[in-house]
Length: 238
Image 1 (cartoon, rainbow, N blue to C red):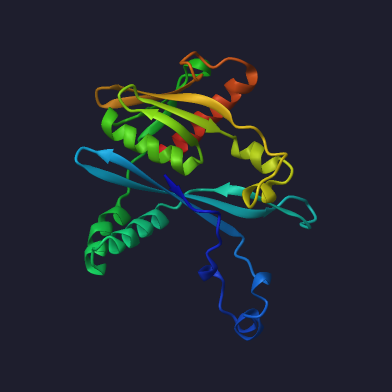
Image 2 (cartoon, rainbow, N blue to C red):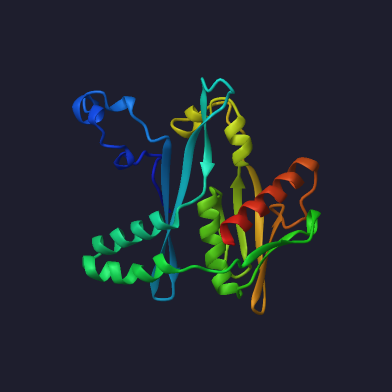
């Protein structure tokens, strides 16, 4: 696993008259209000390897009615940035610009129907994916990366991901969010540990959240967080 720091894409800044004349000297005064992070995961696949790229994003929002203070919240992952990252990686690994464009052209044009939905409620709730286990395993792994889960271990044969997770809404509301994202914060919420299980059944697969030992999630706090996790996973997979 390789992961970048949160960084601003300053190519998004407008090249207006003020910035062209004095902005170069006062560069820190300008901000896009967005931050990006990329995670690269390399998995064994037979005699070769598979490389996955996941994008995570933040945006700056006002946190008061007077608009005199701001905070950071998560924004949706951008598949277009993931495709471009993979294309540039292909070039670095020896492909030509033309070859990389051809290989990525199909990925840019894919428009899939919704294939994941929440089924059931409470401890028995699952995310049902309309795909067999092998493909669902890859998609769930990428979805967890995009959603910011920390995968501490995985067991593909059993269909288990052992994760640490902090609810982004709780993270965004806690004191010192900016400091935590860009350098650490002693007041940051403590991650909770769970086991995410993927169970295949023919042409569909179910994702459910369990305790680290496989027991049903109990307690109001953990149950609420498990429901939130399933919703996040569903949003990333659909």
